[in-house]
Image 1: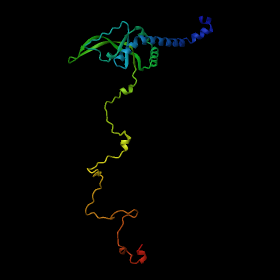
Image 2 (image 1 turned 120 degrees about the vertical axis):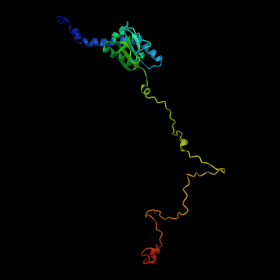
Image 3 (image 1 turned 120 degrees about the horizontal axis):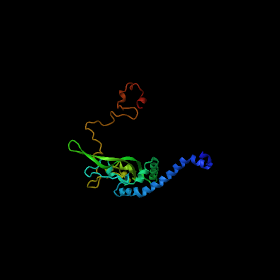
Image 4 (image 1 turned 180 degrees about the horizontal axis):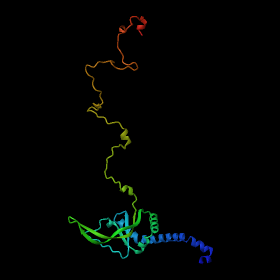
Length: 244
């Protein structure tokens, strides 16, 4: 009954109020995360950069969460490289997937890479210690599900994974004048060039026949040095033919 008394303008607003509130929430989430980023996350990023790191992993804990790790048996899951921030307001902010999408876009706009936002288990305190066979101790920690942010500002991450420290001396000639120059000649005591033994042709055997025996002609193959009188039918030719 109440809807009948609403003006058409208000009815159109109520019809699309879901989309309107969604856009308002996106804009509010963007503004709120920028505050979290500058006040809580940015100092941790600067601290990581001052240590020489090029990425940062931040876990968002509640205000009343306590972290008490055993110094002798710390967690072995890589949490020692994580940083934490205690903020219940930020924890509530990341409960919504749409807020995480907005935060990811804000980080992209700031030029950050490899951005990951989600929820993971984080060890807070040691519950008990179990003794394994052989005397090895196993520590059981209490894990809580908390939001996390991971981002990187590394510019050349592809090169960091393929580093070759081997230095190989190049054998290529980069000097064109050196590459096109004639080889150096060796001179004797009188200043005459020495002919390398590699450049001389191999000596011929003492019994090797001279001439063109068994050598191929330009077109007709081997040249036979025979007396014209021995050619079959040569005696029957006229004198003029024998002189050809």
